[in-house]
Length: 309
Image: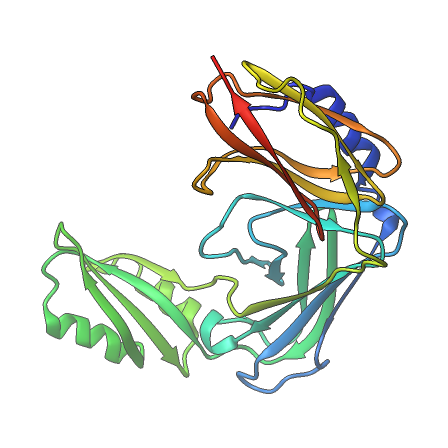
């Protein structure tokens, strides 16, 4: 992606607009009950609220909050991006609800009191609950090539397992995905250490069943102004200014005549009350007529951009 040539100016804009002060964000974390029965799902909720007057940027790992139960850290099965940015405008809030399913995760692994912990950016919160030891869960078992079907069935019977899926890889190795009930899955895993047919025995412990809700508070539609592009026609770069009436998330893109986005030059927050200068590098664009699109949270402006060589 081509960079904005006025990078120093843009960084000053961001540092003046987006802050990460902990005092501005209040965090709450709780479970839906304080005590649970055998294999009863446990619902936990994390709520983050911006109580200050500035936009707050929180950068967290993967898709959102991560969780742990006692000493077991859990992760997402896949990440859209490993550094995910969340912006909170003043008064806005986001909540994440996670359903901890003992039948899937083999958690908790002991009887009694437990602690579930949520981590988001620099925040870490824990809450306690009472629950019995889980007697079920899911696991992936890798088997050596050409493991006989009766051996696979014997493994399933020994674990009192339902085989949910079975796959054969190109090298002949076999993977079975199982659901067990009525046994300690950790003890079962240990018991299969050294089994001649078993390459690996992995518990399926990922963060699943997470839903999110966010409320973005806006007092009125945002208005912003964009100066005329200079020079026009342009050869290697073009300059302009953007001003907004309130802190606002702005994206600056160039589109061709067919409406295809060619390049994104800026994506961030701007402060109000100032004209923010931009100078973008168009030296790699072929000669043609383009459209420079400046998009705000509730407004959109575009100008024709003529590139000559």
